[in-house]
Image 1 (cartoon, rainbow, N blue to C red):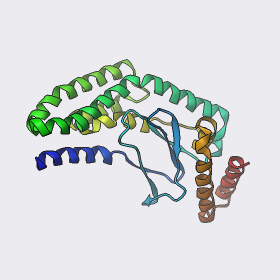
Image 2 (image 1 turned 180 degrees about the vertical axis):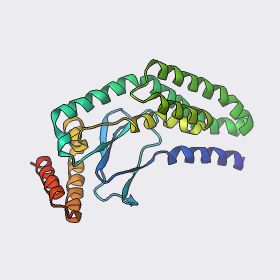
Image 3 (image 1 turned 90 degrees about the vertical axis):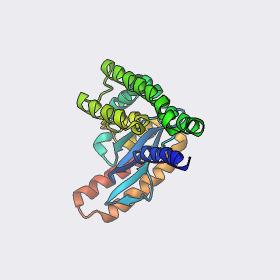
Image 4 (image 1 turned 180 degrees about the horizontal axis):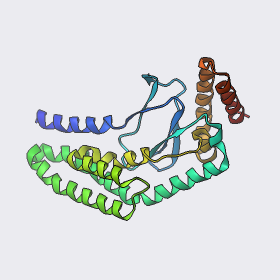
Length: 237
């Protein structure tokens, strides 16, 4: 029984590790919460690994998307770029509904039903029971991709689906993998100030101000300092 439980713990650990992301110091995370509302993550004092910021996405919301966005980019604050990314994210939210359902089914299958069934049936019989469900989920994902690639090239889809097929624990993370690869061009802070609920803005602005001050102190290039100063004046005018 211990080894059977250890199998599912290892499976969830592999799935969770996929939610640990490294982003540049001038990137932030735009993600959906449980209610599919937008939130922006920017740490005032980030944990860094090799000069990159470590971000942990929520592994318990497989149906929620997460994007990385540049910030401290003054060119990205123009309304056209903001409207373009707003349109792109809204479109993806709508079109990704079938994929949301499939990754949620996969999550429930492996991380809820799997451990429960293992307690009564044993690991071997449980895996045999869950295998057809996984096969159906993969087949449905392929049908979804054939109908709409959701902005991702076919080669990347082929790699993702192959990985999910042979390592089923990555299947519940498929939607986050898709959204994480979706390019956005607007400035993340400008996007948040325009489209994220205002309740979250004070904390975000405080973190942004702290990060900009630290960046200015560490910056030796005069041109870059002028750009950051210009951006700071815009952000906190």
